[in-house]
Length: 286
Image 1 (cartoon, one colour):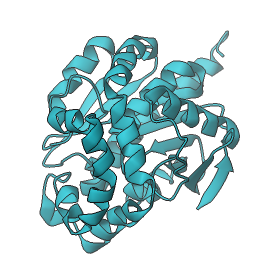
Image 2: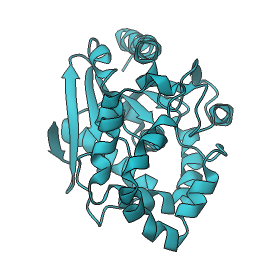
Image 3: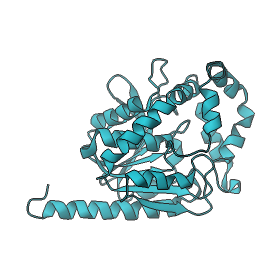
Image 4: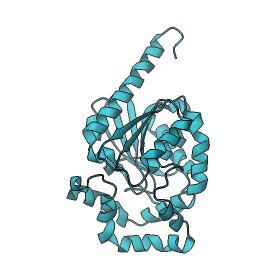
């Protein structure tokens, strides 16, 4: 793992490959481990940066780390600055998808294309009860110690993210569980949920700003975390966004179907990059 100081906080990341930059952003309670099956494939045509965002994985979990979406997006843009990435293809999963979209709205010139994998959004009705419970202060205070104490149940919740639980192996279960024992990880998740409603309102307001960026929405058709039907609501703001559905996959299609996921992403990104090069080669292109 490498690490960069991004304006007073550290971001850990794994780097692989060569070519145009591609940045992969994890979701809530996820980390760079999520992307291990797709990084070697995507690295054949890109310099891939798989991040542990602050408050997740093995990155720092400071008590003073802000949990709101705008702050998470600001930390992502700060990483682009620290890594010297003037432009990248930005891939975000779940809450990382919302973070990537918001960051793109704040730094349009830095994002060549945007790939959102089951991005958190206000139109998904799945999980609303859980979110409401975690916004209850007594429950929010109890959640981190109770969640750590119930470590034997963690595999159950990991399996719920798959479309076909038979595809999960011990490596996956162990890898997802590893950082959850660290102090601060569950606490940061609670802080993120606490500002969910205003964050989703800000995300809604930000979506029209990224309408000019090529966007690919990827969903597993068995997603039980973020409703695949909410893609249609996102397309109302991003009418040119392309939607790809991975059959028989759950919330993490890049885990269950890495080859198919990479085929979709590489085809989309390759077209965007080709058009970008063609635009620069024309008279007056920039």
